[in-house]
Length: 209
Image (tube, rainbow, N blue to C red; front, top):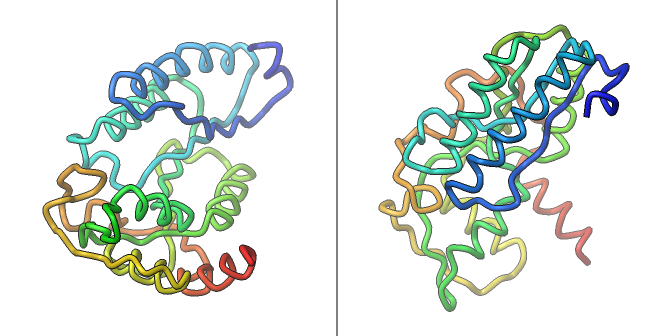
């Protein structure tokens, strides 16, 4: 791996576990850290950038979030100058989230507050960070609008003329884990995406035709 990084000044880490099972995802990020950071140090990498999640440290009851916190801690203790980009959920995740919550013609989903962002805006934010000096801290990136999860689901289904009906169930939290009201939204976003969810729906629907 050191040879692969030879000459690199900046490493952008967007890797993710192929399995979200609690022990598998934790093992993935721990193994990645053991392999990657010594190679970066040997190659003289000057800036490590990693994509993480807004509110990840507020959701310790969800295994994937615990694994991401472990990844963040490994970055901070690596000795490599770093910036951790914490992003809110992507617009592109709303469809799979709706499908996961579907039983028959009903989508049972919580009303947890979210501030999702377009993947293209995240890519632009990471690119911007990559040409700046390491922050040795966090940058929070979010979309322009705050919406509740059930609202996002209803707008998504309406835009696609999908007959499924949304049933709000606050007890469901986020992916089955209870989270606080503001767990998924940033206290102070450092960067805001430009694309609104309503505009993204129109654009993505046009592309699908």
